[in-house]
Length: 120
Image (cartoon, rainbow, N blue to C red; front, side, top):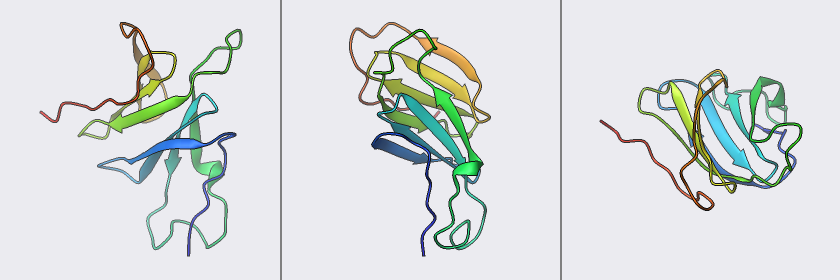
């Protein structure tokens, strides 16, 4: 049995489980990250059923920008309240677990391929 998470328009580079809630984050080549709500249980939803209605899309571009900002890495903080995403445009973004942007870190000079929260 498996749950199908359908919504990204391009390949998915990274996924991370929220350490406190039934949330899964995914980052994709479609310039988005998604936060998926996975219901508690054996597979979350019935086998073969789509779970795409249970996701929040985190856009990594604005309407006047190109869509070449692959989301290449992501990580939840230890409290499960914040999600950090890194993308090919060199920006690290911080989001809350409801998908609202909290901060953008703009000091990188190239693509971000890895990021991690300090555990303390």
